[in-house]
Image 1 (cartoon, rainbow, N blue to C red):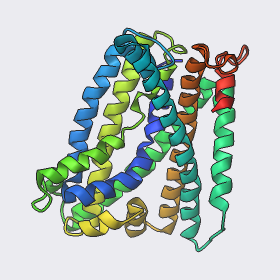
Image 2: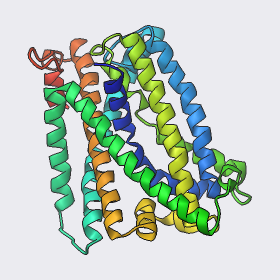
Image 3: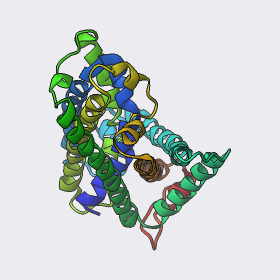
Length: 330
């Protein structure tokens, strides 16, 4: 594997389109119109954290990611706790985003007045099954598919954002107020909103779990990790700014309470078909996160098995070169 596959893994776990579908509203609730400023601060903070992963990845190539890094510096007990914590995090990501695949699909159907009880459950389970099969069979194909899916979803939101900015510029004018602290929320509100900005990057270190499957990992993994943070950060700044100016600087309460702000903007500046397309794009992004989280969790379990937990999950598939037992175990 290479840099492309590494970035595909990291981007799929953080799922930028899905993060922007939820976290901007939460950030606005804390910082008001200064939510984009919070995402700027959060990007800088995560870039610093990312540099620590870069420093470790340049010296250690290991499928256990933080398990190996922390264990090397602070001993096996600390590494053990970090490894299990990270594996459970990836597993929870997988389960939660599988539900969101069905939820976004339901939202797309709802735009046309179609409601099917329980459909989200079927779609969520199907997403897990398909992701498990792909994580088991071919990591190169899976990683590239993750990158393509996320890129397509990001492009859909970028196109909508350009339309929003063009329309707003022609009517109200584009202002830089979202990058100045809100008079009502103040800097304390920006600090609170940074929490949601940082959460939007959760999983950026996912590429590190490919340390033993990547050619020249001491170069490829650091580039993939830091590149993911920077690319996602630029997208977050753009998407958060679009949502703030799209709703209007004086209408932040509506944005803060909107459970689907991007869908609202698509209906306002586009059409029902555009909104449905955005909902489906978000569903695809959620599936990409399911796939990325499952494949990362399987590698974390693989390292546990190799360390003595269970031989069945510590082996590599002879033909496919993937941790097959761990992929099925997750």
